[in-house]
Image (cartoon, rainbow over all chains, first blue to last red; front, side, top):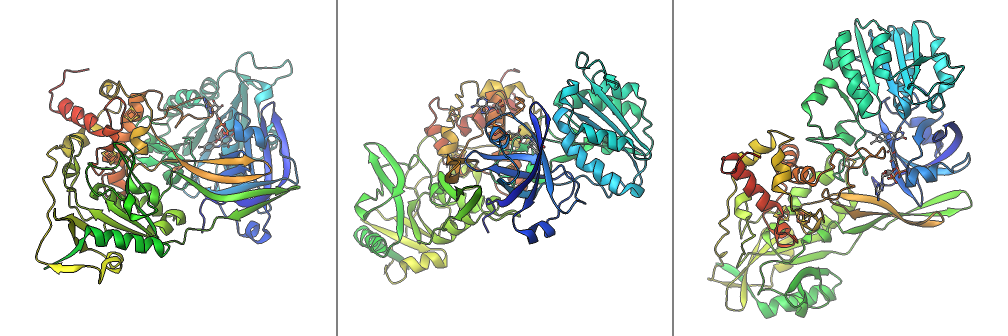
Length: 276
Length: 339
Ligand SMILES: Cc1cc2nc3c(=O)[nH]c(=O)nc-3n(C[C@H](O)[C@H](O)[C@H](O)COP(=O)(O)OP(=O)(O)OC[C@H]3O[C@@H](n4cnc5c(N)ncnc54)[C@H](O)[C@@H]3O)c2cc1C
Ligand code: SF4
Ligand code: SF4
Ligand code: FES
């Protein structure tokens, strides 16, 4: 088998979220593969725009959805620029699923705190939907999501949907200056908003994904709230090419992020050198 | 008793293999004073002596510098992917150095953990490595410091020893090797021997303790300050194996290929966000040394270096790995002032 050859996927739907973020729903051209496709939330794929190359994105749909998979990307370079132009009916390539996943089994019976910044919503969104669709297995769910401006929030419609579920609290925030006159969410940086919100942290796990600076300042807040390092999770974004442990690009010290990550808890992360 | 083949007979054999459609590679003088492992059209091109080792390595015959992974074509909105035919031609790499041959079994587990790389594996199966035990070494060789030797057998299917009289002793080490030489040699009482081994040493414990120590040690930057980040070390290294995957062609059709890459390049780990975990050359050198002497042995059981010295020989500023290792030893023994 050629481990580098992708499957061909039909583009079913494209949604634009912000000036530079779109999400795409895709399904295997080979219908039986779509039926058999299994992954765990937190895993990623390598997506192709033929003629331009490959890019790594999280699979941001829930593993409970069988008809399609979804990814969400920010336009930033060669491949994402090409993907920006795709329309329903087009074909792209997909390899995966790769990497480890969120330990959703271990999280059962716990309260979940999701903290995301900007384009980091997609890798959290899959876990949120997964938890909501297995609602009885999880306790309270708190979602703190921030972006630079109101216009930079992704999956805004879903934020409202999530807020409608029982025992789910959604806190939206934008950076100071990023608000619009009708903005009814918080104004402030994610770590500060998180601290102010005094989220109950008993029997909880947290998933924090966002720009390095946001993660850096959110961690002490979570520790102060009483979360142990082993209960705080994040997903690394080391640059990748092969996704299968060969190309030598993704290692953070001794770990190959594409195979042993991208999901790590803080306890594991603290053992790694700062190579991410 | 030993098995011996004359230089003339060996060349006749090579021409025979080429005639049968076997791809033969070996040291070849491509320019005055410049020997590379290259494909041979006829045995006259084979350079058996008069140099220390080729400037490149044999890895390119199992893991080419540039390799097509598959093709793509766009018709209307339909994309069609076309498979690449895996190579089918048997291949002999002749007069490889032991420090080249050893790299292949060291790389095998990397190309096979979980995901099996058929491109590599197929070439590996098709390849017979005939090593020539080293007759000489230079100031850059340090095979003995990493557990190898001028006559180390690892990775070789057969090994030749120059008997100094226009003939070679042939030691067949695997079935592949026997297949090449069975019935082609004469029995003799002459036994070959590798010549003097390199004397350079490395205290591997000290290297370990340094790389397991302060990740942010300022020494990394200091010891490697002159590195230009050109990547020559990685490209000529028998064991460096990083690659990039890119498209060649346009949206209408083309191919997806992999090309060698190197951790010494400044964009190697740059995230799309602009964040780069390794912004300084010292951090990139730390990666190269740590990967070879810490990460790889821990994961795959072998030091990712055969002591061939190519990285230093080919370095425009005479750096490469040994001088860095040597400086690290000095730091560890306190022979260097605190940075
Ligand atoms: C596990 C993982 C999950 C990820 N999940 C997501 C996700 O869900 N959504 C998402 O949007 N992204 C995600 N990413 C990031 C994503 O992979 C990259 O944004 C994407 O690959 C960019 O590809 P590109 O070809 O468009 O950019 P490239 O063309 O590779 O360029 C990206 C950036 O690199 C820099 N660059 C490139 N070439 C040069 C050069 N020659 N000189 C200087 N700078 C240069 C530029 O700053 C450019 O903006 C993830 C990454 C990982 C590793
Ligand atoms: S060590 Fe030498 S060969 Fe390697 S990147 Fe630096 S300058 Fe180039
Ligand atoms: S690191 Fe240098 S000495 Fe070691 S195998 Fe590679 S080129 Fe040879
Ligand atoms: S992405 Fe290639 S080794 Fe991890």
